[in-house]
Amino acid sequence: MSKLNKDVISLILKELYDRGNTLYSCLLVDRTWYEMTVPILWKNPFRFHLKEKAHIIIINVILSYLSEESRVNLRNQGIELINTYQHQQPLLNYISFWKYLDLAVLDKMIETFVTDTNINQSKISIIGLEIMNIFNRNTKFYFLCNFSYYNFTSGTELYFSELGCLHCNSTQDNSILAEGLAILNTSIKKLSFDIVYNNTHNFGIIKLIEGQKNLKEVKFNNKYLVTFKESIIGPLEELLIKCADTIQYLKIDWKPVTNLFSYLVNLISLEIHGYLHNNWNHLENISLPLLKYLKAYYVSSKILASIIENTIGNLIEISIIYDKSGDDEGRLIHAIYQNCPNLNYLKFSLFNKNFSEFENLLINCQILNGLEIFCIHENQINWKILYEILTRSTPIESLSLFLDNWKDRSSMLLQIFSLIKVEQIQQHQLKLEDLLQKYKTKGVIKNYCTNRYVFEDFEWIQSKFCTLYD
Image 1 (cartoon, rainbow, N blue to C red):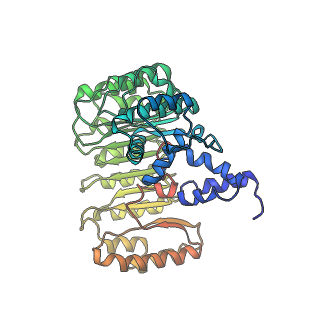
Image 2: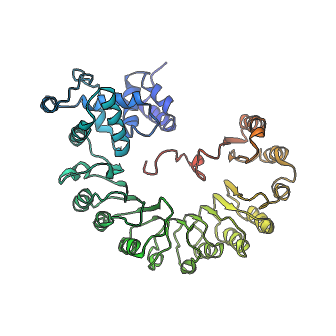
Image 3: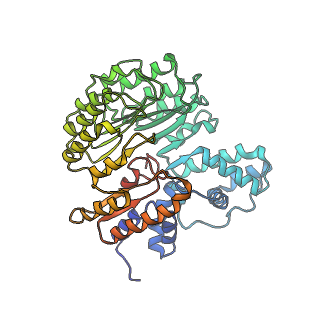
């Protein structure tokens, strides 16, 4: 094949970013393709699912960067690395491209390597330390996940002095690293913190947040749906208030104990999980004028309507789920189509009594590109009436009519799935796939997805296949 301009190759690789097997094949085209593909794959080697054989290969590649002094040191401690590529110089410095580190995955890879090479399991920590030293000499990580898997000593925070993103949890208080980072690194922009138990060790993470000067995204994740003590979440909220000028993205899994939201006027994205709380009245009058993304689970529709009414038309994506009908769903739908002229994507729970307002929403939200109706209970929706609203026909046939009527508009991105009996799935799926492929060939559909379990909300449309921090 004729040689392509590097800019063209770069564009092609960008399109292939989420296709692991195809990216790997690009390594084999020629040296130019190889040199341009390697940085993409090595930026986060854990991004794609890897088999144990690949784990061993990666550890061997890492250990090929050991100095002779380190090899002697390991040998003196009873670790003979016979199978590493000690006499082969890598074509490129692969480690220099590595920016995303998940220590839990790395720990698993080292265990696999040790087992495969018959090294004593007690030597894992020694090998782990040598690998961290190799990283320190060859790269600076931008993203760190699961640092509680390692017991860091003073000085190891230097490995992560250029971190921009951090994902950690409360199962272990690694205050040495967190406090060291608080002093050394004040430029962390994204923080995801899994709160696992009520006896959480927060001191290290509190010191870390205190030291940040440009924290933009914060996610607190309630992993086991426990009700947190005020003594745990109060200090965290006070810190968020201090960072209110910079925070633009927030996810919380608890009912705030402070007036947190009255300070976060610069929020662009808000995610609330209300599984454990019924009273959210403190949110009713908050004003979030810049809000573009709203995701809420089991929060009162009355409160959500109020939040939407207090925005100024910037919302472009809304995902709202609740499992029972109340008195305010109509107001919520009304608030959406009256206050969200720029709405692109909508996922929400719909009930029979709100069909008239739903039809008004379809009429008024002119640039809606994605719609997902969430239904838990069998009798929650009269599907016949719903399809009549959408296409005035019956399920598969109505979809065909709907697509026929779309032919003169821009190609659509379509996600559709059914919760039907197991014995019906194969026949239904084949019929649906044939129909969708037919309209994709015609150009009516740009892309489609029929698997509800692969993507969260509209991630499949927006190509957010990888970690949030990519």
